[in-house]
Length: 285
Image (cartoon, rainbow, N blue to C red; front, top):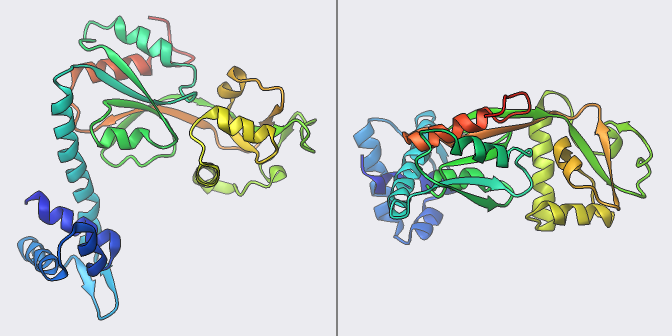
């Protein structure tokens, strides 16, 4: 199976409209439609249900969409890794201020491993960028908090810690020792709480166009929002205008190290070992 028809298929699946997909691909609609029908004939399955006004994925199409994205990501990543091979190094993607206080320990443990054949370059990134860098071949491993899209990735848990609320100093609840999420008006409840909280935090990023913790905490100080952070972040970043409150019902913050499933790099494996041994209860190297 060639990559071009897969790219065509993924674009149509994302748009669910042949005309818009053709425009994205900068081709005309008839050859795009022919390419999709040829792909269906080669696979012996129907990928799209077509009607006069609608296009929908079939169950077979939904399966292929997941796998095609993995395959195309892997192909693109292979090219980038080949380009990076001219300057060998191990790239670890980390959102600034979101390493659980483990980054220095991880790097020290890695350096002590005989399999640590490549130097580590830390790539600081913004909210939600880590997995994109992994799939694009721009990073070899990443520190990331759950939940995230694990498609094409493996991961190991590094730490699990409580979350706290960050509120302005003049907030009506600032004098309490602990609060519930409902007290703060956050739309988080029940078994789906982790995903709901993630969407709430995504919303903060989208509405306020923030990239780092200092921006978020400044907005809290100004009374623009309240947010939820891992306990270790609150301990490292006291602010005069921010009060951190214990939360009684927030899902824990789970930090993992993630890497591409297809990775066969001994250096990446050594970095994963270093990270999994760097947790709060792990012995020093």
